[in-house]
Amino acid sequence: MGKVALLHLLCGVLVFWSVSVVKAEDAYKYFTWTVSYGTASPLGVRQQVILINGQFPGPRLDLVTNDNVILNLINKLDEPLLLTWNGIKQRKNSWQDGVLGTNCPIPPNSNYTYKFQTKDQIGSYTYFPSTQLHRAVGGFGALNVYARSVIPVPYAKPAGDFSLLIGDWYKSSHKVLRQLLDSGKSLPYPNGLLINGQKQSTFAGDQGKTYMFRISNVGLKNSINFRIQGHKMRVVEVEGSHVLQNIYDSIDVHVGQSLSVLVTLDQPPKDYYIVASTRFSRIALTATSVLHYTNSRTPVSGPVPPAPTGQMHWSMLQARTFRWNLTANAARPNPQGTFHYGKITISRTFVMANSAPIINGKLRYAVNSVSYVNPDTPLKLADHFNIPGVFSLNSIQAFPSGGSPYLATAVFPASHHDFIEIVFQNNEATMQSWHLDGYDFWVAGFGAGTWTQASRNKYNLVDALTRHTTQVYPKSWTAILVSMDNQGMWNLRSAMWDKQYLGQQVYLRVYNPTQSLANEYDIPTNALLCGKAAGRHP
Image (cartoon, rainbow, N blue to C red; front, side, top):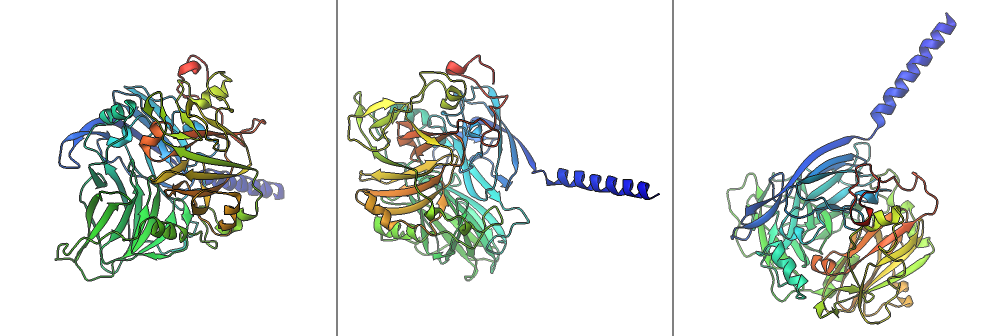
């Protein structure tokens, strides 16, 4: 009888263990999205826009940390298409990044199923088309990653959650804008500014309650300033970082950036302006929405709250106040401050100087004198199949040399587990914004003039926040630190889409000679193959 009892006990333990394993597996979320053209009048004039499942902007994608996303994307446009997931790190999985350096575009009347995980991430992000200038007419949307229920966040759960996609907008079609760039001309100034694809919308809440506003700049060119009439904003999260919870009257958000603020409806019951306006431009574009108290009987009134009078210096000072909350966790239970990035030895430095040269009689945008051109074969496929002649690791220098500008497929080499320093040097008189796929990075410092090694003395090596997109002010520099812990081929680009389109981008090849699934996943069995990779087997 003792042996029988022991057998029953062991069976019970095994059953419990197996059930626990099943329950512990991260959730799977399934989506089918159809991308098509439609018509809308965001600025009062009917124009062609890009819809996802008939929506403009596209559906809000709400996920939880570690969710597995299976998303079947059907392309009903008349041109090849890719979506990229701006800020999702795609751990070990640059195969799913959705840019032309990693993926063949989805042909018209065809589909591709993305498979990726929100591994160890929380925060406010976006998705958008990375091909051509499609994002100029839609196809973008909010992507929010919520913390698991077992992981605390450093603020009380808000009563509601609003996503605000703010960006400059053109009345011209993406094909007309593309023709302008292809002809060697720059884009004109945008025609307007939109919030969630509209000139005005309404966000309602109960008096006395606190709401989260997730703010993203999805525009092509312009920084924006965001503010709410009569209300303070408490910043709690910036692109996956929990930050010190400072209070602001208005906040600058640069192209490609996202952040989350908490707003308490603590004013008399009425309606209030929500305002976004362009920054650092000769002509200020403004879009307004309404914050509606549910017990309000009074419409919005009074002047629209003005933008701050301070310009670049004011904005840079504000940017330095966004700092890591060292005692708060992010997606994982350990506090953010347990990673002492400032004590790690830098293994390599890249200094990237942007410019706007004329090459072959046409305007291009360049980095270290190199203006990027997309090859017919994605770099990741060429690397995987050892296809020669697609890219060279010697096509761009790690420091600006002032040489004559030229066209090339620029790829920086980096070793897996390097800790690198990237300095964005902006010698031009306009704002710049840089984004890195596959990673977040510490924004260690901003400064005026030309970066030198002595500029490191100004770095924040204690509580700089991590994010995926950073601004670079005119005639200034921004320095970031990156831990190269994600093997793959990763796009480092200007977030200003006309500049990206005309060559202001490179790729980082993060390489480990030892092939291991612990470092990088295999090529997907459904990978689209094109160019010199056509006809090969994944």
